Length: 340
Ligand code: PHE
Image (cartoon, rainbow, N blue to C red; front, side, top):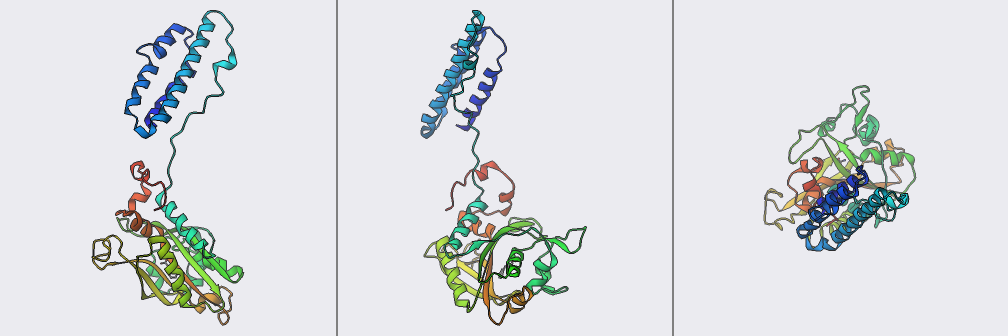
């Protein structure tokens, strides 16, 4: 269908710029028994059934367009003054350009955003080029802290204080500094890490991180929020579990797994035969982080979480290679029309 539309568009352009004033030459070339109109009409049989109606309309319009050009050429050669306005039929619909589709990462990102928006979270954004303070120091990772090595960072050569953010926690720092409490935000965005590109890792990827700070926020609130998210995202039958973990900016910290929906817990290559797949890191915001950002840690508590959108998209659509997301292969991209 797309191919046909492109052909029609090309022929139309050719007809518009048809210079030879000989109406007969035009008629034979376009309207004759072996002319372009006939040939392209013949392509109807290759059009998929569901597109036939639409294709028929385009073909008919094209035929009328060619016929009106012929009438004008005839008028010209009979020395009649052609109606200049009629030469271009302004009522014809514009040429159809092939439509793109949404990128799977965008589809899943939007779905994640809408789930958290229903819980009252708003979207916050920040710069991809960050300074050391917002990406590390404020998050309880002072200089020389070994945990800085957990994320291989790209530094900007002109200024050692600048880097490509390794997580969108930096946006959370910026929001905390504004001091408008309570805070209930999610931070979607692209992040960068100096990793060797493979089927499972890339030097850039996308995250959605979340932050809730108010009085009396507890780990139970965190669990309930993530429980709601998992049910909305993956369905009611999916189970989840928390494992203790370590992040410098949260205490206690945890990683959250969901039961593998590909093998339903039986054990497959995606869950590495464990029946569980890790989907995010989370925890209670470390008091040092609150203090670093000018929030009274005696009065306020909060939780934070962060997930990779690629990971969730791969699970949802059963995509096995992360590199597909950034290769711009139309055959891959065309398959995604709406979030599953
Ligand atoms: N910032 C962490 C990362 O990028 C994720 C995270 C966010 C973990 C918030 C805990 C709390 O890996």
